[in-house]
Structure formats: C-alpha cells, structure tokens
Amino acid sequence: MPAGPVTFAITNSGYVPHELVVLQTSVPQDQLPLSSTDPKQVQEPGLLGQAQNIAVGATATLKLTLAGGPYDLICNIDGHYKDGMHTALTVTGS
Ligand SMILES: [Cu+2]
Image 1 (tube, helix red, strand yellow):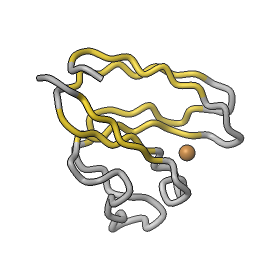
Image 2 (image 1 turned 90 degrees about the vertical axis):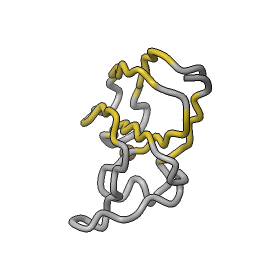
Image 3 (image 1 turned 90 degrees about the horizontal axis):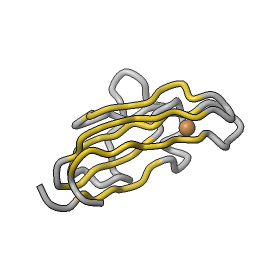
Image 4 (image 1 turned 135 degrees about the vertical axis):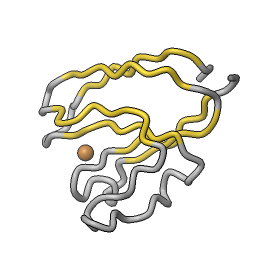
C-alpha cells in the first residue's frame, strides 16, 4: 500500500478474542523473537499501534500514518503468534 494515513477496519470473525499489532520493522514476520517475560508472546520491535481485546464478532478501527518500508502485522495474545497470526505489509513511497 502507499505511504500515508491508513485506517485498518478490523473484524474478529473468530471464536476467541484477538488483537491487531502493527510493527514497523525489518524483522521478517515469521521470525520475531520470543518475549523474555512471556514465552507465549513475541517481542514487538517498532511498535507503532495496536487494537487490543477485540471480542468475538466485534469490530475495531486503528488509524495510523505509515511511512514507506516493511511492517509486520501480528496478534500477540498468548499463543496466537505461534499459531500463525502474523503477516507482512509493505508500504511504498515516503
Ligand atoms: Cu489472536
């Protein structure tokens, strides 16, 4: 997506609460290091914003201004990252 203001429109269509964490980092989305305090979570380098505790069936919005570069989008509720809740986002421009 192009750099600039963005609104993430989030819907939890799952069966347990989730969250969306936006990290501005060049660490690959599947290689984030484990948290030193809670091994069920990962570290959050470049934490830019997050929408937490999104209940089942609920919606949330997260408004951020993104500069060009690599980002990781993750859910960092215990165990969710390990279960695959992570993806990469590339922002182009400046
Ligand atoms: Cu989750």
